[in-house]
Image (cartoon, rainbow, N blue to C red; front, side, top):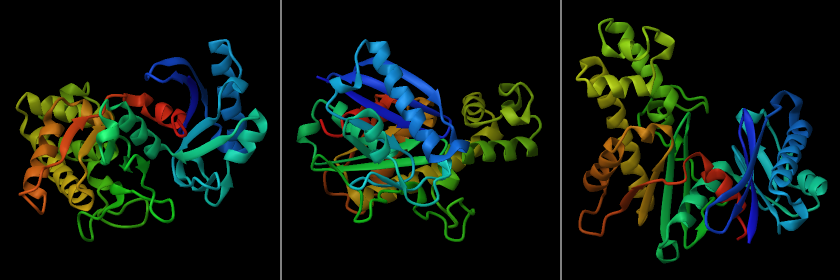
Amino acid sequence: MRYLGVDIGGTKIAAGIVDENFHILAEETVPTDVAGGPNAITADIVRAVQAACAQAGTCVDAFPYVGIGCAGTIDAKAGVVKYANNLRFESDVSLAAPVAAALGRPVYLENDANCAGLGEFLALEEHRRIQSFVMITLGTGIGSACVIDGKLYRGFNGAAPELGHCIIEADGILCDCGARGCWEMYCAGHSLRDKAQELARRNPQSAMWAQAGGKLERIDGHAAFAAWREGDAAAGEVVNYYLHYFKVGIANAINAFQPEVLALGGGICNQGDILLEAAREAVHTGSYCKTVQPTTVIRARLGSKAGIFGAAYLRR
């Protein structure tokens, strides 16, 4: 059996044809015409799907449905994007219906982080025996998903979970969402970059400068972690700051859900085992009850393709 999934981002739309064994058989990406609005984005989705089908030598009629993952708050039942900042959707935008009309297939819409989480959950060989699973993606922002008894948990209004917007510092850094102290403002990729640049400016002899070719704008989380491994003190301050808030957020997630499995993904997780070890420490020290079986922490395995797989498997 083959499935068709679409992952919508603020810069590109990826459509992929996958099989039941987590192999991508064809994939096509097109730029996202955000400025063109919902109609242009609908056309982009259709174009990407048709191109992926042509690449695979098939047509959209060969698939039982099309699954779509999209950033923002999603009403999955209605197929509507309630809000998506990166697409400039500020009120209800019907996305599933126009795509279904254009392609002639049923279309199912879901939040992109939920799709990534579902993909990672289904990729586990033992997923049928796992009652609860949480996925946290550490990228430009912080994405999160929760699967309970094999089903995505969305909250009563479709807006859950948003672990990146849990408050971990009262009256802390102002977040784009309007709140202060959100986890995302301390542990997302842009936050790590900003902290690294702040410490680099204060420490002109830091090895972070060499890692970035002497250019401030190129100092990011990768440069900070690389300089830290060289024993650089300023980079060590960046890493310690990051790990402190990372563990606070992980402890909150554990105490909120107590999942059997916690998967960590995203670009920041490419820094070796340091985040896995920190997360496991947070499970051990931050969990309210120390006498129950602890959460198992793993590294996500599907990488940037998790969203495509999850969207494709929405009704598998």
